Length: 214
Image (cartoon, rainbow, N blue to C red; front, top):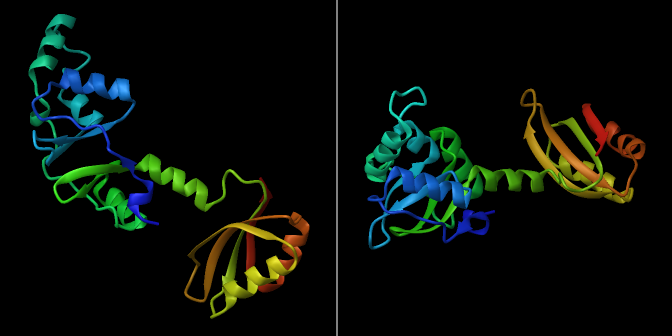
């Protein structure tokens, strides 16, 4: 799964010379939390988040009156608060690499670029949607988590046993086990009862850690 398939295309961008007040109003209106900042030629020059703008705004305990606050917000420009060293990705970047960059750099979204031009945005909200799909969260079925012995063909053995019994695997996600001798898995299966699924899987795994119908 690549970023280009999951990004928001043609995102709203702003220029460095608009005021904080304008940028905040755009964010409220468009219901977004960050904007790529581009120059007059459309080249990416920075990124600004709602947090950046609020941090640059006067404190709520300031002695300034509302008119003075509004004036200050209209005078401070986005270029004074934006992040200039922007972490970007391209359309052919694997989705998990984009997620790693967000986690490592503690950011909630990345501009997607083609050369110097912004063609999309990939955000934590996009990743949450993918997460729901990977776990089949919107599908009805039996959710099963287990630890299995680590050997070649272990996964094929378990999945074949489930499908041969009539189960339809809706989602399957593997994670690290407790040590190198085992591996973990969470899967969701339909067209089979919880009791039957346990009957099929338990002889092939080391431990079932959770099972529920959802």
